[in-house]
Amino acid sequence: MSEKRRRFDEEFKKNAVKLSYASVKTIMEIASDLRLREVILYRRRQKKGPDGNKT
Image 1 (cartoon, rainbow, N blue to C red):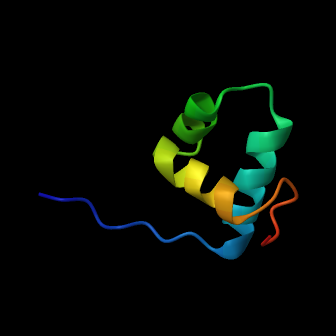
Image 2: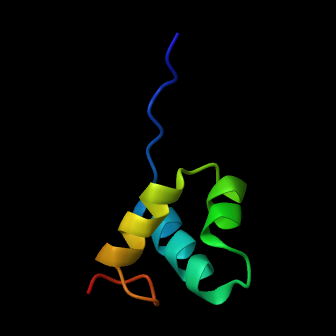
C-alpha cells in the first residue's frame, strides 16, 4: 500500500531552507530529520535563497 502524499505549508518550507543553510549538518542529515527526500530539499534551496524567500 502506498503512503499518502504529505503537504507542507510555506512556513515549513521556508524554515527547512533556512535550516539547511544555517546548520552544520549535511543536507542528508537535515532531510532525514525532517523526513524529506534530499532532492526535495535541494530543489527548494534552488527556488529560494538562504533566507527562505523566493529569488
